[in-house]
Length: 217
Image 1 (cartoon, rainbow, N blue to C red):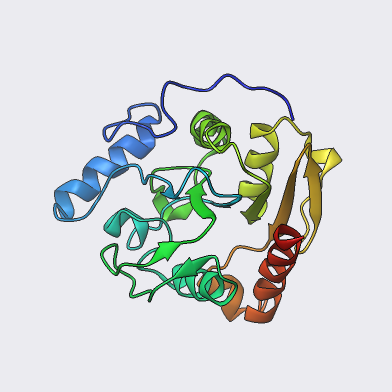
Image 2 (image 1 turned 180 degrees about the vertical axis):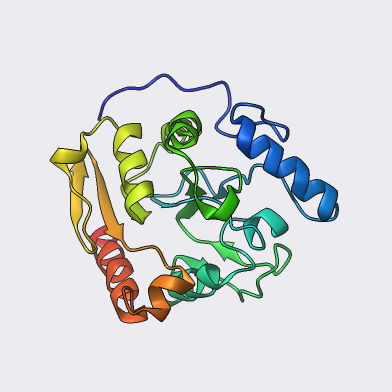
């Protein structure tokens, strides 16, 4: 894995100005819903974990509202149920950041830390925010597995660890190697993907069953 320079922090400032369109959208959300988080969403879980899950970006009424990745929207319902099933979380998920749920040997982050309009970050925003993803990876000394949720998370993660897209093409269920780290691909656990059966709960569980088996070896 290529050694990449990391920013001073793995988390952007609450008022991060690096992506003007996202900063403007954030300001609009703060004016409309002042009690929401409405800021870059920090990674959730211990930096000593062996597993990192990388999503796309915070959902407007999910993590952007609650301040915890995948908390408060449908994608979180499926993700946290699966993590609980395979021992990567403990407690009860109640879609609130104060529900007491704890991750076990697992950390969750996003390729883009701020909510984008229509849940669609621009390529320039993905590129700009990758410094924080790379820094997050660099702060995890025991990292052995990364699950990328969707093609954008997959491609940004590849660049963060120094791999070319052609060397590790995205496909649900695919496993790629980046030095000592294995990269596991999954379709994103969004409501759209599950409603259209692009991703079934069984398909999603199979990815984490493989991760669990590999980490237990």
